[in-house]
Amino acid sequence: MTRLWYCDHHAFPLPAGHRFPVAKYRLVRERLAATGLFEFEPAPPADAAVIAKAHAADYVRRFLEGKLDAAAMRRIGFPWSEGLVRRTLVSVGGTLKACDDALAKGWGGNLAGGTHHAFHAEGSGFCVFNDIAVAIRHLGRRAAVVDLDVHQGDGTAEIFEEDAEVFTLSIHGEKNFPFRKRASKLDIGLADGTGDDEYLTVLETALPRVFEFAPEVVFYQSGVDGLADDTLGRLKLTLEGLARRDHLVVAACRDAGLPLIITLGGGYSSPIEKTAEAHAQTFAVAARIFGSGSASPAMAG
Image (tube, rainbow, N blue to C red):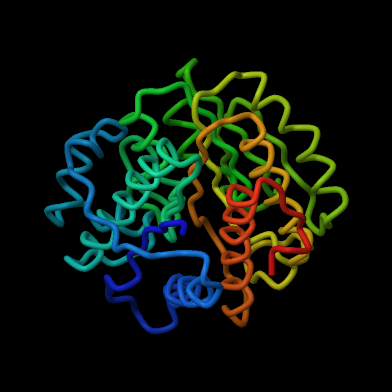
């Protein structure tokens, strides 16, 4: 049975009407539990010294101590609280533990993480620390990031912009947040309204670049905010299209014999249950591909 790491039991206070979809994390875990394919473990907190491998030590310290100024917290998008600190640390910790699983068993998953807007010395866009960057620095291996969140992975791009040992691919909405993009190793911006067929053609064209880089490990930022129902996404992807997307990425990594770490990423559909269904589908696709040796998108429900 596949192990997944979670942190949805760590609550943190948000103002009424806040846009962050905190409820989806528990819903995703409940959907996956119903499949019988997984076991779940609460993620441990990441150590500050490990986080500082990817982030400025002073930024890490000031966030943990609640000493970031108001402007810095506005960029992050959350009010500071001890609950936010706990949730942030275990979200990073889940990705670190998923790395251990991937190296041991082929793939690992964190039902949180994917906080790809966090830069080396500041947070942004609901992202405090960049769990993918922290994990790559901690592993010390040649790595590739396949970022398919609808929002460009600007923080990940900035952290690894000058790092020849990390390949960053971002396929995202060209006119969507962040409005000031950073340079990934390969960026592909999509027009508003892009649908399944065009999206999958772009992905099929881009994926070979990932494997030409000869990474030792792959991180998959599997945001589902490209769904047509997403309130922030502006693309027109379907649940079936996302299943095909997930199958392409996961099967390619399995076939290449590369450890794969999957992080949750963004998703803001209304109702939020649609986002939870899409997120759960990603992990179900991965479990079936790595568990059976083959899987079709139709098996992913």
